[in-house]
Image 1 (cartoon, rainbow, N blue to C red):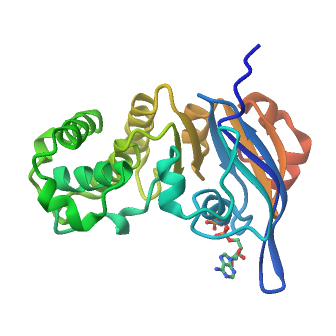
Image 2 (image 1 turned 180 degrees about the horizontal axis):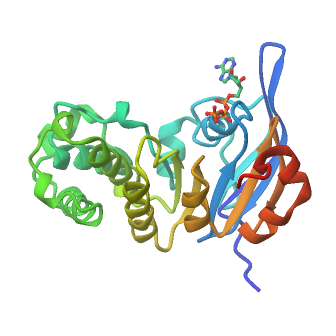
Length: 251
Ligand SMILES: Nc1ncnc2c1ncn2[C@@H]1O[C@H](COP(=O)(O)OP(=O)(O)OP(=O)(O)O)[C@@H](O)[C@H]1O
């Protein structure tokens, strides 16, 4: 039996915007190394939950623990340096920097350097080596010097994944990583996600159920701001409450 705390634990988390309570006492416990998909209907609060966990917004109440340490209310960069990284949508890529420079920025940021210093630190060997390794991991070696703005959509998503893992965070949050991809692109990308997150704890918000079943050890079902079910894909598929609230007959 392991004495390690969960990699990520959410306890009685609540978030209101004005009079609307969007996250309503959510609980979740994710063990180290587990891959968890968060599914739920539109507007259930999945992105809001990610915003709370990654520090982009502050909870109204409740606790978020990263490796046993409370992180609720901390700033995104503090949470990042404690080992949690979130994929930022394509819009977060620096379009006028090369693929390599984007990855190096991410590494430097995780190491604690501000973006403004990165030019001065071109020779910093650790950052270069980590960026180089990530470039290979996300299979963008032949795009190394290409400006991010000139990448295809799928390549931008791969770069976004690279930016999320470059700093070496142990807990990685991916928000709809396969959105906008076709079936074969999705299945290749799911394989890439599996490869680059080996040994990490993964939380993923995903609408594509094939991708969810291919990636997730466990599925958390968020409905109206509450986790109504959490279990293996088989258990979730068989759960009548989930069938009624979300999966319906079509999944
Ligand atoms: N900053 C905000 N101010 C007010 N309301 C917000 C804010 N952010 C989100 N909401 C509301 O919270 C609810 C949940 O939104 P959220 O984006 O978290 O859902 P979601 O489960 O990610 O949905 P989708 O699957 O469509 O992306 C929505 O009704 C949304 O309008």
